[in-house]
Amino acid sequence: MENTALVKLISGIMEECEKLIPGYMKNEEDRRIANGNCAICIIDSAGNIYGKMYGTGKVRARESFRVAWTKASQVHLTGFKTGEFEKLAFNNEIDEASYGIERPDYIGWEGGQPLVLADGTILSAGFSGIRGIYDLEIVVRALQIVEKG
Amino acid sequence: MANANLPGIIYKMIEACEKLFTEYVQIEADRIKNDGNASVCIIDADGNIYGKMFGTGKIKMRETFEIAWIKASQVHITGISTGEFEKLVFTDAIDEKKYGITRRDFIGWKGGIPVTLDDGTALSVGFSGFRGVTDVKLIERAATIVNKK
Image (cartoon, rainbow over all chains, first blue to last red):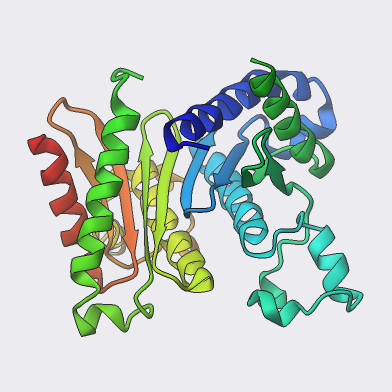
């Protein structure tokens, strides 16, 4: 995808996530994690990094971005969803040494995933601030909304 | 966001950083710091994050972005250059509690600075990969290039 179009699409994903966050905040289990101070990180194949911290708590949002970045960058290096990569590594189903990440640096949590765009472009995405399954879901939903136009 | 052109200006600043990276990476004392890998991270007042990893070593690039991000986000919260903030804290010149960052999370190193664009827009910028003084110099030069355009 041409860079300008890619940047526009990524900005769209981040905007849609911002609109979707209030819906997740209706659930106490998600609200109590970061009280809406969530963050997203997206990395493209050229090493460009795009992100956004949501909410008004700068310190908590900073922590959310640290986790979102760690998730996205682990996907950038491995190509696998976070959590799934660790399962494969600990079950000796992949040669983890080939990825260069030390075990203490594995994030472990869900919320990092490769995003395949309609034209085949692959992005590495990480979201943090709600429960792991929804960290994954919110980004997928945002992409679907943006791609539907 | 006050300036609708801000993302474009930030992308130009990242381009300027990339050009300057190719210059500083020729200097042995800087190149050996991270095997010729470096990163920049820029945060605007609305919590939008922009960055890029430079070099060819994916693991080192990841490490440098993490440091660049910590530097930029510390500036985003404090408004004070990294290294300088810690000096002020440890000489009791400021009340560190109001910033919300615990001491063990202070980055300590130079390379995170507030940047003000010609139109008054404030950015928090972190660079990592070279010597601290070089990280700062590179950001200052990139800001000057963008402000001249």
